[in-house]
Length: 173
Ligand SMILES: *[C@@H]1O[C@H](CO)[C@@H](O)[C@H](O)[C@H]1NC(C)=O
Ligand SMILES: *[C@@H]1O[C@H](CO)[C@@H](O)[C@H](O)[C@H]1NC(C)=O
Image 1 (cartoon, rainbow, N blue to C red):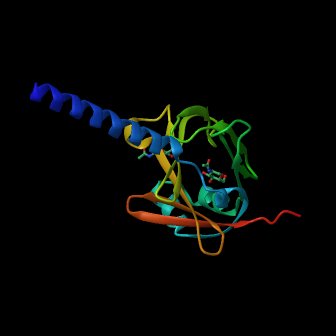
Image 2: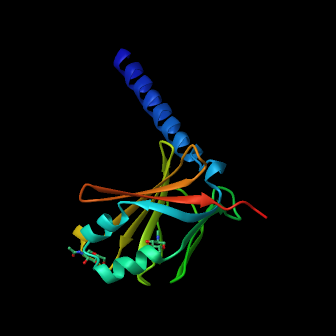
Image 3: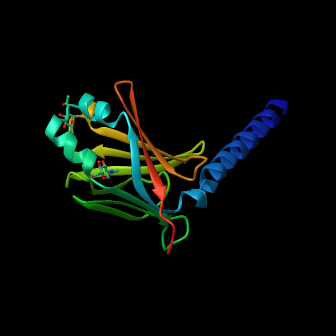
């Protein structure tokens, strides 16, 4: 009898714990400070970062000169978001995604990517898996935060080289 009660209690607690953790994951959302249009202002270690990725000098100069604008906002449906990477070369528009849910879309390279956005510990992450690349070299994660100057900070890391790029919020006119 006693064992049965214990087992039941255990099951109930396990159920509660599970429900709690599921609700916490569901409750997660991107804070409004991330919403807006942000224009690339300056970079730190970007050349070293690209170089370590094997990008040649000429291409690096082109990539460094390219203007980049990020647009982050809410989607049409509840719990959905829109994200855009606007550049002189190509625009990538990802609309209507949810946090933690992977979707397939075209990357900047014009190829299919599996993309997942997440929001954990004050950081928005954008993970890309390039589907037609070998598994040891197909993942890229972009980390975004808003700093004390209200700028969007993008952090990328490769082979212990950390690169940061700052985007200034474009004020609505
Ligand atoms: C956004 O565009 C820039 C400039 O072309 C590019 O370097 C960067 O990888 C793009 N970011 C994403 C997440 O596609
Ligand atoms: C890794 O993938 C990138 C992007 O496709 C490519 O430019 C680079 O040459 C690859 N590096 C290696 C070591 O395969």
